[in-house]
Image (cartoon, rainbow, N blue to C red; front, side, top):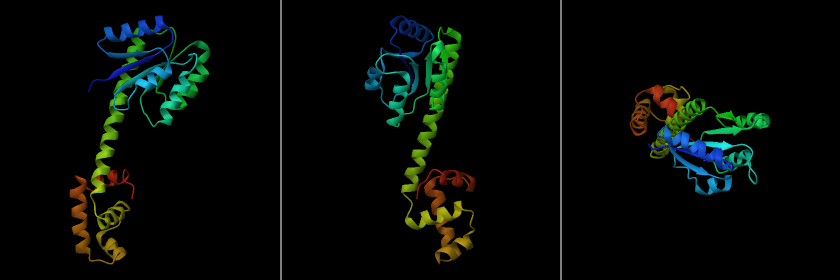
Length: 200
């Protein structure tokens, strides 16, 4: 999976230096001079991370972060800050940013943080993909199978579920087998983890 480091900084010299450092390290980079240009270009299916300048004219880094959050877009953000921006950077981390670096930035430290952010992005996308697959499996269950799955997730035995639904324990066992098969659950613990991702 090709990951892109998006660099957003209004300072052309800083932007060019960051791009050169990252590309020299073999990384794919897309640079933008301001927040609106980045937001117009960025698509959710492009994996990577965002190096985002905190203090930019027109649209600040915090405003870019807020715009991403409002659209439900998740990308690891590393804020680049001047000395006076530290309190804002702390607020940015509280709003979901993964890191912030104070200018001037040491190349080795930047590359280390970028690699960490890229690993985090990969982890988030794998989790999201698994959740979507579970929800697709869940959508294929019958209404009775969904009822049984909810009771199983609540810790009820087949006999207890049978009493709740007014059916025989054997019928519950058939439903349980279907649920395990359709959900692709390896065991009960696996099914319980899946249940947390499913909305009735």
